[in-house]
Length: 144
Image (tube, rainbow, N blue to C red; front, side, top):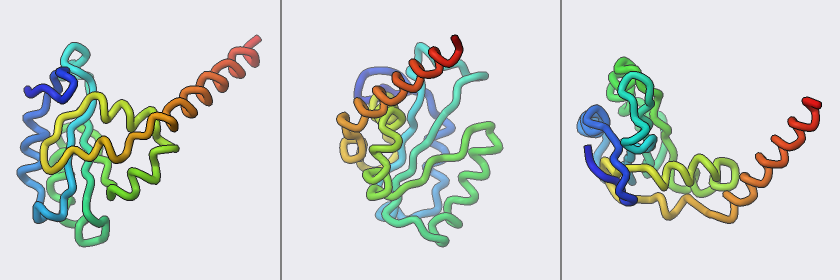
């Protein structure tokens, strides 16, 4: 157990093991982080451990190199890691604003640099929150 930048504890000895098993040269991995619930919400039988792997380039060779550690991770009952390039994350900031802010807020770097500043734009977050509130408001109206 280690603390992330905000002080919330995130579990992950299995995640540390995942990174040790990665079959990619270090310079090809921009960063790998564990994100998810802070310690006070974590339940070993119910909570997910989620990984974000930011690679220099995502191609067939790198995906193949991830196969063995990802397969082991999945057998342990976890979700498949998210695999992006930094450019893909930046271009996805408008679509996944809430999810990326959550990743930025509750994460622990397992390898490489913390790239969370590069992919989290708060102005997109406000737009997504407004969209979800308006959608919920419409659903509430439809229910009546």
